[in-house]
Amino acid sequence: MKKLWFIFAQSVTVSLAVVFVVQIFYPKLLNLTSQYGEPHVARVDQQSNSVLSYSLAAQKAMPSVVNIFTSKKNSANTHQQFLDDPLFKRFFGDQYDDQPQHENSLGSGVIVNENGLILTNQHVIEAADEIKVALEDGRTVSAHIVGTDPDTDLAVLKIDMRNLPAITFADAEKNKVGDIVLAIGNPFGVGQTVTQGIISALGRNHLGISTFENFIQTDASINPGNSGGALIDAEGNLVGINSAIYSRNGGSMGIGFAIPVSIAKQVMEQIIRQGSVTRGWIGIEAQDITTELADSFKLKNTQGSLIAGIIKNSPAEQAGLRAGDILLEINGLQVIDSNSMLALISELKPNKQAILKIARNQKEFNFAVMIGRRPKFEANLN
Image 1 (cartoon, rainbow, N blue to C red):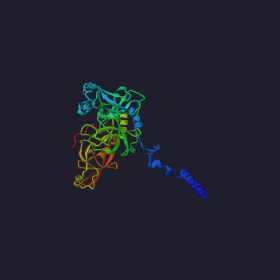
Image 2 (image 1 turned 135 degrees about the horizontal axis):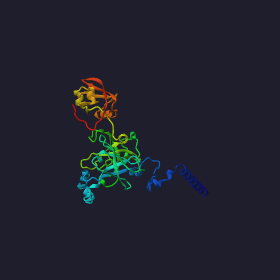
Image 3 (image 1 turned 45 degrees about the vertical axis):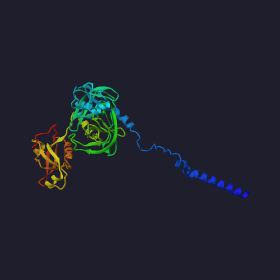
């Protein structure tokens, strides 16, 4: 009997020792309840890069986004169309039917300077006689136009106020497809609104929206009234100026376009400095080279830009260029298509000479062209 009791005591002692060792060195082996019984509550890793809310980005940028409207009667026919839209009335009823025409919301804008400079779209303010700006805090003030650039659809306004919440600019070179973005504006005049999406594409062109196109495409909802508002990143920095949407019914279909902050900044700085934007110009009408055109001109590929027409007395005509020439290079920089050609020429300084390489009759030639200043309108093609 004593022998059995001794064996039992030893077994208990050994078992307790094993449990003690396991508890110290392998605690998860004893956590059976968490694995098979009650649900295990996972801890939130505070060091994680996962973003659960974009409220900080919105709070940072929203004070910099303003609503732009006019006091001109019957000047905002486009906005009135939205008020008359059955879908709009279904949502809001008839509460806006008797509103006076002299306070029609035109769009949005972004404060870029604490001393009252505002960046917006040119099409937002082009038909306005008197422009007013409503700040996020409710204050309303008159604004005047510093300058506009129809070729990029940008405009700079000025209000006589100080210590305003200016937006910070993002690094445009860091933008990537898939990055989270927020669109801030005043859609349909209902009030400041934030929508969320991603950068769907970069470098969108050939859209027919403006002369110089290099748009950011996003699926963040952009609706009428958002034009001129801010497209920001997840840190609240300005990525672009919301400008247009692709839509079959007037509302967002997940395809919106914004002018990159790099272009907006360049245009804004020139407007502030000299009241307008100066671009190089040689006076040609160009078109992309299709596979059929490449075959007919016996070209090796479709790179380059076909000169389809030349303006009379333009720098191109004076230099000896002809319709039918293929523009290959500008100052040693390759011309990919007509859009890249237009961008390269616009960056040249007027009254400076540039060397253009062209292909004519399956031979290549270099032409020295004196760059002119791009006029507002082009006409009189040969």
